[in-house]
Every structure is written in structure tokens, then in C-alpha cells.
Image 1 (cartoon, one colour):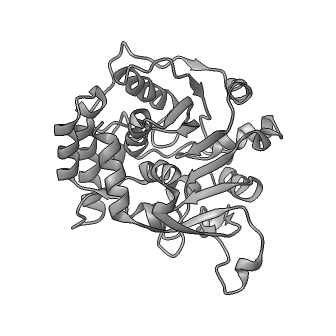
Image 2 (cartoon, helix red, strand yellow; image 1 turned 120 degrees about the vertical axis):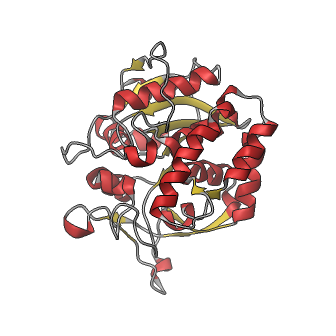
Length: 308
């Protein structure tokens, strides 16, 4: 079992990642930190609470994350991709509201569990705050997995930047340059994690989980958004799910160890930079950057877990 402290901002792909984690027999979610990103913090929290309600796992604590980035800017949301409420056409019932615990609960969890893995599939603001409040935080975590960055491929919010790094480049640069034992799962692999409508239907036919009953409606909204962005695309890429899938199946892709910087200002804001020149591998680094993906292995893992 892996004890996972999950940072998220659901969001459709975040929500499907939460479903994957809740259904995975070898994942123990010890807490979910809910913050701004794809939607505002309040809506993200209600979405988390709704998913936990469907999964009958309301014992998992929801911890209040950040409301805006370290730049101080008002967040930009993406209703055209995730829907106004973050779950496409689905609006969680008004009777289900997330009860947020104070941010300091993170540090209590760290004391109560061993070998914790932090997974951040949203903006990195809340994770950066954890280090600001406790400079020993990183020493108490076994490893960190981040969905963010883009190497050798264009960005998805600008020509250079991926959305999470662009949303708070100050926090992302801090995390990527200061945190040890971190794994980056960037767009160059997550763009390949495409799930088709027929695969979603196959999962629904196989599963009786209340979580899966909403999967098609959530996915269809996401797919339609991607079909507008990338005409002819065969399905929708599940960026955040892949981050968890690679954590559980590290040999499903290949990576290189390189230091990463994130640009903070100007036209290059949010761009992730690493040195891939010949000879640069001689420099010691604890940061792993995934660069390739065994797509069929990912599909097998996703279908198996989601069909349980």
C-alpha cells in the first residue's frame, strides 16, 4: 500500500484521477488538499466531497489549500474545458459540502503515517506553502510526484507553458528547484495518455461503482472540449491519471534525471527548462523527468483499476 497525500483542484482530469486512486487496491489516500486551479477552492472542495460521498469514503480528510497563486494574481479558470462547476455537466448536490480542515492538518498526517508519497496534480501553490510553514517537510516525505511541465513539446496554455506551471510559476519554480526526490510527469507523456469513448463505455459496463456511473457524462464534456482544441483527436488525454498510474507502475515509462527550472516572468512564464545536452547526465540530480510512455501498459492499468 502507498500512503498518498493528494493535492488537487478538480477539474475533470483531477476528478478522474481521484476516482482512480479511490478504486486502486494499493493506494491509501490519507488526505486530499483542495485548492484553486481549474475551479475556485470552494467548488473544488465540494467536488472532492461529492466524489468521496459516491465512493463511500467520507472518512478521508479534506484539507483547505490555497485560493490564489504566489504571484497574487486572481486565478484564471477554464469552464470551457472543465465546466462551470468543474465536473462538466454535473453539479454536486447542495446537500454535499466539503468540510475543510485547517492546512496544519497536513503536518499531523505526516506525523501519523509512514512512507508518505505526495502527489500534486494541480497548481503547486499549496505544496510550496507546506515547505514555507515547515522547512523540514520535505525530509518527512518519501517522494513527490508532480503533474507539470512540458519538454520537447508545446505548452497547453501558451506556446511554451503547461497549465499548472503557468498558473503559479513562482511556486512551481520553488518546488522543482528546492524539493528532493521529485518526479515530473509532463505534457510530453501525458498528452499520449488518451482514453477513448469506447473505453469509457467498456468500464461502465464492467463496473457497478457509483463513481463510475458519472464517468461518461464527465468524460464526454472533457472530450468535446479537446475535440474543439485538437480536431480529429481520438479521445481525451488524462494527464492527472497518468501521474498516479506511473507512480504505481514506474516501469511503464522511461525517465531521465535532470534539474528543472521554471520561468517566472514574461513571454516564457511557466516554461520548464532542463539541460538534456550530451554530458549533462553526469550532473547529479534527484529529479526524474518522464520522457516516454508505454501506452498499451497504461491502457491496461487504467481499464483494470477503473473496472473494479
